Length: 133
Image (cartoon, rainbow, N blue to C red):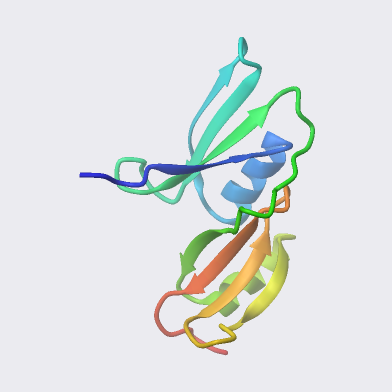
């Protein structure tokens, strides 16, 4: 049996990233460990226990102040119960919504895109019927 465990992204400022993923999105810091000899920190965040959920690994290399995201990376995706209410609440927390909620251009569920402090895009996908449009 195989299961997707985590996705790793490199972050510029671990405190800013933890504030975004934990405070704004509601994930929990599951574990964090400094590796002084390698000069990096790994922090794992998620909506649930690593034993049952895929999580995000935030890697902070102490001696690197910025990264280029690159053209191959697309986005992380998060399912939400009410995309309109979620985007409204995220905006109140200072989260940048880069694509307002609405139907996909070529059909499909209602989606929105937000951006983390590093510029990574996160797609929000409506799960079920939204409360209001």
